[in-house]
Amino acid sequence: MPLINMPEFSGTLLDEFAARGTARIDTPVIQPAAPFLDMAGEDLRRRIFLTESETGESLCLRPEFTIPVCLRHIENATGTPRRYGYLGEVFRQRREGDNEFYQAGIEDLGETAVATADARAVNDAAQILANLIPGRKLDVTLGDQAVFEAVVKALGLPGGWQKRLIQSFGNNAHLRQLLMTLASPQAPSGLSPELSALLAKDDAALIAHIDQTMQDTGYSTNASRSPREIAARLKEKQSLTQTRLDGSALALLTEFLSLEMPLSQAPVALAGFADAAGLALGSAIVTFEARASAMEELGMDLDKVTYRAAFGRPLDYYTGLVFEVSRDNAVLAGGGRFDRLMTLLGANEDIPAVGFSLWLDRIEQARAR
Image (cartoon, rainbow, N blue to C red; front, side, top):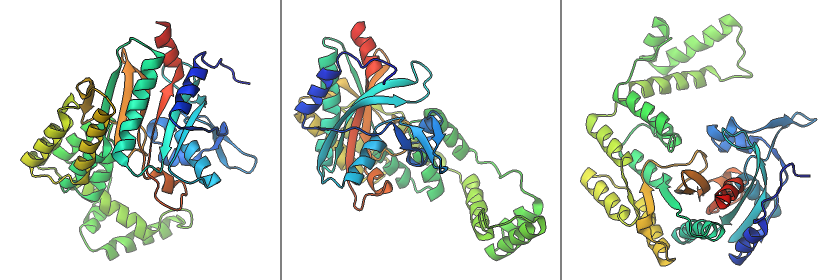
């Protein structure tokens, strides 16, 4: 039995989903924890409620629906394209509000017309909220993980730094910290003079030193990294700490992250930024422009949608579009594109995917006001 009451508008919401061609799907409340721990991101990982099965398998209370819906789709071997609608309880620690609450949403799996599917997701979320909270101003904010990744890669940073920056997208405080580190790199600390000297030599001497140290201390390699793996990690850390982003590249990245404007102006602004900076952003810009056009074709007023280059959402599986719909600074809906998630969860082929979730307790509060 649920501990909290289902919102009174739940039936209306399910009708909205059905009208958009979705199939109702439900998933177990108890979920394997590994997919969330591996793929959902640090922000969600530290909020989930963990438990353990009799066999020692790590389990959790369902903290969100995207991963369970994808797992259920793979398990049922259902063909694509497929649109799923869901409504149910999720459980995670929150700074404000109950730790058990209702979420609903739509997951759009297998639609190869990426820009069209993206536009439909944003438009559906905005329209459903407008129907549930009529006459209220809603704020739509949009970002793009793929555009940010394209900018970072075009700057020519080492792979390790690209990964760090991309993983921090949407966490502005952490991103600023990383940029400060790139602007003023520090020498690695905590290394002995002997180890520091070996890092400057060939790999063989470093690996032999680590191997001998592990043998002398009785440290087994059976349950840990091998000497070769440790040496490679030390080399990578040294490379990362010694990397300095030159002033012009740092200024370009900072300029990009400061971009904020109505979506109607964003395609031209991004193209102008890329041309002036001499950066080839490739398919990311093409998809961005196509998405904006598709949103306009659906009747969305792009002057009332805000594009913010630094905007992301705190889930690691997003790959392109990210967006939120809010009212009075309360996020009522959020979603984005997660094209890599299906294969990471075990699908035999690449399946493009986009979706959004609705926070029903916040919508209920907005309706009451």
